[in-house]
Image (cartoon, rainbow, N blue to C red; front, side, top):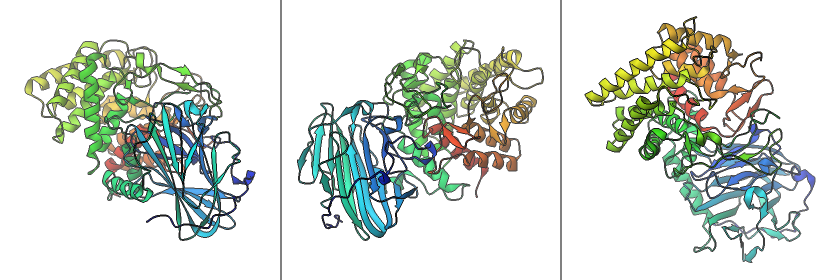
Length: 602
């Protein structure tokens, strides 16, 4: 149905009550996330698209208000308002909700799903749930992380087109929208319109790689209908599982962060500080081997979400077959190397500095080969591993044989050492692939190597108390060591597992929030926040140890740290009840899915 033509109003006056002067200053917990697989956007509580890169996740942002820079697409009432919002079930279709003195208004927001590599369609549908009132829409994209505006807008009827030589943008507005020529933002477009109950008014922004447009503006109703159907097909109902709405939303997040190559981006953002003024700001807009393996493992646990497993097997397999035992820890989605870190000259999210790129490209991380074997074993047990997958598994096995005793950066990407977690995950992966319908020669070879690695690790990295320690020269416990029993390197009943689990619970937990490790002389929470994936690891470990009530306690404590919009960042500041780090963080959503399904039906 086409939008109902409304009376063309006098343009409402812009006032400070229409929203904050800038964007990117709200707590992370108040941002919503929409995505189409190839890129994503964060929506602020005042109806602003505060972050969106194009054409892909790791390209420059067109809307960078999150980092205090330029680029804006804001929908707000002209009057004072209170904000809220919600997702439609089994989707990343978000409703920005505004309550004013004159009515209740919504902007239904989505990136048309699934997206294509060279074109994004951003949909915003305005409606009045109660009453009527004036709305203001401001549109001023700016490339190069908000530093280069689009100028020379050409108008044709209800469309506005501009390009910067690399990207073409077309905004289609409803007939009721009145263009305010005196836009307060240079080279931006501002519109005023009245929204009345019973009608909907569509704004459609197209972003096209290159110059020129070879097709007509998309029909918004058709885009909405196609996206609704695609989301219903992409996200299973997740009935009969604990926390089913959060599980379904997490599947939607992971599906939307997985591109056409099969790689899942680690996080949609860059440079969001893990601690105020600590210079701990990283770019996570890339695909980590380890994270993609976690996503694949999560997909294997939910009927109807197996495509996450298939995509992970395909993407990780491609990387191993290409780079063999020199496989990098992370890549661009298309498999190309990520770029080295460089400072980004923008104001930044408060408390942080800005960087693009990541130093991980230069690292060796042994555990990725163990994680790959665990992923391939899971696929094989479900008859989803083909000959090419087995070839990739063979490469991972050879990489462990060749490099298991080298110093490496480990799961936390620290200084090169012989990290215990990495070796034990390789043990787990070797045992899993041996049990996964592998040829007899594989089983013997894998199990022999697994036994050797376990013996060597016990010789060098077993604490005098009987628990695992982080490294031969580092006696501290580490939450990542829970994965040894979770993934089957050794049983939960093994004395080393019991002692490790007990030490982690007693030394790294505070109020049932779990931290990665403790720095000498510092209290928990001083150096970094709660590392949320660790809570779900402990839930799985407790469940494997036969303590379901304790497992549920850890699970629910971790789940409570999600944002008001239902998203997880990497860390949680338990003292200030704030999200820290980049958002959303895929591996936390993946581990929530795995822990929820392991806990059983609701």
